[in-house]
Structures are given as C-alpha cells and as structure tokens.
Amino acid sequence: MIRPVATPGRDHPITIERNPARVVVMAGGRVLADSRAALTLREADYPPVLYIPRADVEMTRLERTGHATYCPYKGDASYYRLLDGGPREAEAAWSYESPYPAVAEIEGHLAFYPSRVEAIEERPAG
Image (cartoon, helix red, strand yellow):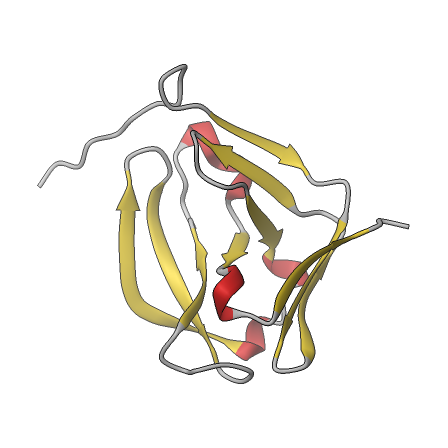
C-alpha cells in the first residue's frame, strides 16, 4: 500500500525551533530526561510538542513497543513505554526515527505524552 506523503505549507504549517529553556521530564519521582537542546515543534492548530535528544533521555528506563503509527507530514512513529514510574502498558513517548526531510531536525529525538509522565517542565536555561 502506498502511503500519502504531504509537505507542510500554508494549509498545514509545521515549524521547528530550538527551545531556549532547560526541559526536564519527571517519571517515578526521578528525572527521566534533562535537556538544554530540546526542540519545539508546532504543527497546524495542535499544541506545541517538545522533542528531546535521545542523548538527554535515560533510555534504559524505556522499552520500545511494537506499536507504530504513520503521519503523512512526519513519517513513521515508534513508541516507548516506561519500565518504571508509570503503568507499563502505557506508552509514554514516541519518536520519528527516519522523519521526512521537512522535519528532519526531530531525528534522534523523543517526545513525551504529558499525561503519562509526572511532569514536563521548561525551566530557565541558566
């Protein structure tokens, strides 16, 4: 099956900017991610999403699931569940491991569901 591929534009804008804040994700009472290099992706009318470099995430606390979805603007998404600090069956994060060129900056990054971790905080970068 051929999947549709769409390019961001005036009818469906996508912007990606470096987030100037220090972004900290908490789960299970512990820091799961701590980054000064997070990206903020804004897509159409959706709420902004923070993408954190894998190097700034405690990847040993996550396990990739078999679940995958497709976005015609970004590509195939894979999902990760928490091994501690939350319900194991709940996927807490997703990643576009080979994103389309229009959003290539998010490669190597994870995004977290705010409702499935304790907190996603934007702190002063200081």
